[in-house]
Length: 252
Image (cartoon, rainbow, N blue to C red):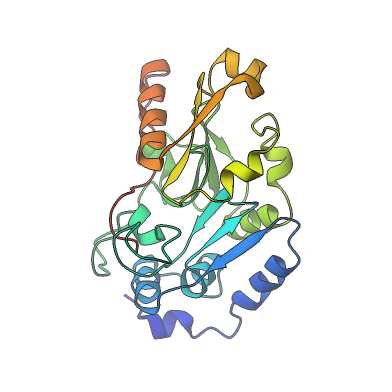
């Protein structure tokens, strides 16, 4: 396995380019502070370089809160138990994907890497080497999305860098059509990174689609939202969605 020093010794690091996209973003972006030890452990497990946007996010951020907190992109926050550290705003990429305690060549996110969630429990995944083995669409290295209103996977037809650039350029506006309501910004911007919004009637019902404003919303743990998506898909379609992220453990 390549060490942190090798993975960061790239002549063309992606961070300056990504910073420029953040500075020029058409949506609000908050960059959370990274933790050096967590960054090192996460990058060494991923075995990607900082020439990639993924490597840049892991090394230079504790995560990104985008568009009034609607989207949470995972990075490398300070270690500790979520909610018990004063500046803990998001769980880390390593925690959400249940990385081993120390980098090991015997572990990989075979079905894909959970890189972000939205406040509705929608899950953004970077496909692994064999997505079809887990019943997931798309090619290896392609971004896919588990939609909370259909509980089905959608191909995003691009890799991680293209996806993040699209998000920063305001791509979520059209993407979330029919899923936002008047005043959503006030409800999302102060949510903790391990919680989201649960709707009643649920988003996948006809009643919710017909009148989203008439639904009621409650703040629930993100683990509950993704668990509900898995159980619903199993009941309705007989499909096992696979892991949608782990919450409640160490931040890093």
